[in-house]
Image (cartoon, rainbow over all chains, first blue to last red; front, side, top):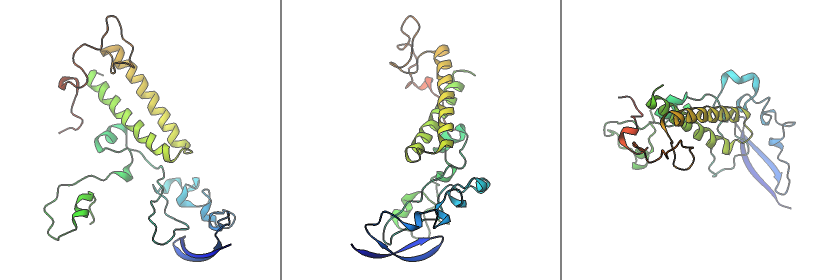
Length: 121
Length: 89
């Protein structure tokens, strides 16, 4: 039985914890232990009472291991109407990322960023 | 609605259906997305039937046809005159 130690970021803080590698139970994923893991009590995970402050992705990520890539999970908030969706190329406002024609960059940015389409300003 | 108006509306609805379908692949338990998807698919289906009743088949092997066989009539879906501009200039 191995005991491994890792850091996990949860609720905005850095939590150091010990856990047994062969344990099926992750305490941070247990709603009885961690209210943020319960969709009904975590305002950023779709708690119904927070419907008005809809954020189209998870904002609290638990058990993130260092040096691993992670994509936040999308959540359904609003959609463009069909006409706008077809014109913009996506039905999801949070994914709308148009390419803008810009002047040749005065400050040299990396060629990779130049191709990404996002404006970092 | 005239032919281009129905066609455009249909393309819009089909596009949203594709978008919601992609979302549902990763969120199969999202009831709200599923309801929106089913609604959009039903709307598109109604509009497709209306279009095909008035203007002929949109596909060669998924659309019913009156007699005689309609698919070979001009314009075909890839002809310039069949289509419209998707963006207003």
